[in-house]
Image 1 (cartoon, one colour):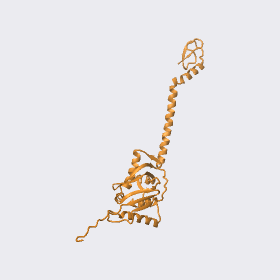
Image 2 (cartoon, helix red, strand yellow):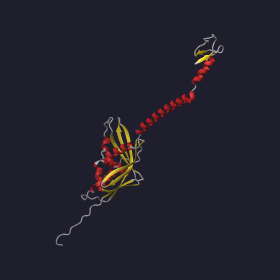
Image 3 (cartoon, one colour):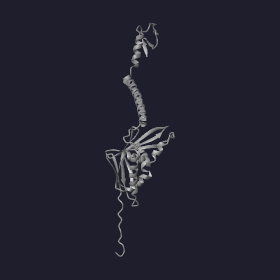
Image 4 (cartoon, one colour):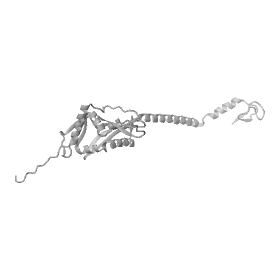
Length: 262
């Protein structure tokens, strides 16, 4: 870039104070104007690059904030609408009903009735007891960084679905809550759970992540030996309102053979 001399018209390099030809003092205002012209973006390219830089920085900040929110959401406590405790009398009644369900075994035992109704609280208490989670929660040893199941809640929804909430302690007594909503399916003496939605903490899990949550519940509940036993004894399992109804298979009809000589 050059600065023209007003007297002789010679071109001088930027930064010069006097003309190299005639020695006259150069007009520095011309230099300032030329600098401003050069700093202006050519065809708006520099302005576009600057805008994209700001957008990239803003996107990075937003992504970082979203990551922080997700991490916080993973460890948020989940609201539970069902109790996990009963008084001694109610607990004994629930356990007696469930034991009667277990007595119907291909004719070797007979339930006192065909249908047994359990509330969400009863199902929750029984689930924790038979899965051994009540005893696990009572232990105070520090699991360190290992995942350890502690408690499960079973919410019976009016829509006929079931919400399973599983508390797992990890990372130095920090708890995580896994939530799975779906239906129990009993078919061909096999008990399964068809999931509809899943969450970890308050964060929804989609696609493969939902399958991860589903697999945790399957390993804890469905693959446990009691589920197989129930599948052989039950004719149906239904959620009606806020109650779970277990329909026991009727005892087999025994055909009496006529005695000889009669």
